[in-house]
Image (cartoon, rainbow, N blue to C red; front, side, top):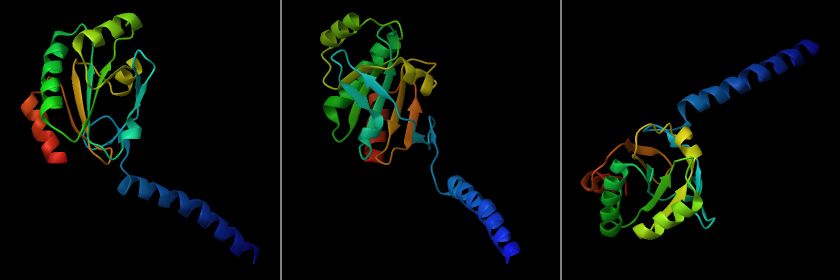
Length: 167
């Protein structure tokens, strides 16, 4: 009888972790930063202390613009995003300033000068999380939290078509 208990215990110790591993590999979408992965969570804070947390927007289509204030390509991207914001409905837009040397007052003034109507926050650590090496980097996350697009300079037309496709 003791041998049966030991055998049962060994089976439980071996089978349960194996079952979890199989579930994890085949049925769960792992978190990541590339297309097809569950978007890694991050937060960004605006100069007034308001916080955007990506995981709180599950169920929404989200466009993330990782950018810096000083980047010429980011200024171009900003205009493409502004057109998107004014012409397409049904998505959440967030611009994330990733410069770790940014001063709060400078950031506050820049936001006011550019008349943003969507959330703009700072999150230098998100650049590490998402391995942002080119500015701007655009990420589109669907309602299930899966990354469906990741690219750099992205036209209004491309973004509009992506949003229509994933609505």
